[in-house]
Amino acid sequence: MKIDWAALASVFGVSLVVTVALVGLFTLGIVALSKLSAPAGSATGGSAALARTSAYACFAACVAAVAYGIYLIVA
Image 1 (cartoon, helix red, strand yellow):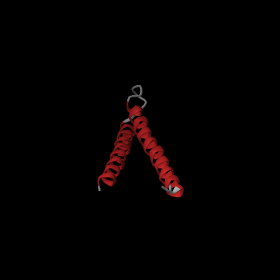
Image 2: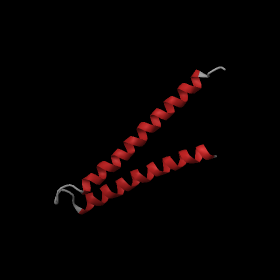
Image 3: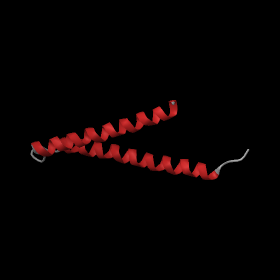
Image 4: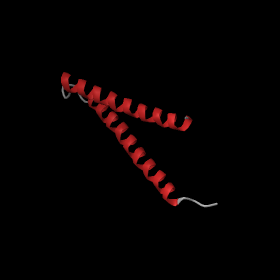
């Protein structure tokens, strides 16, 4: 049995980058939601709407990435 070390390293590298990016994106969503629960008066109507929209966009991107990964595994 021969192991293709270059392919293994490539899979490891891509997996590491995608994992870090996905965790970072989810963290940005959590941070945006935490802006909404800040003390009253610190988030105005415009910034609260922007924080909520960006949080939902981050979570939607995470869901899309996970769904694409499941699609790649099943197909």
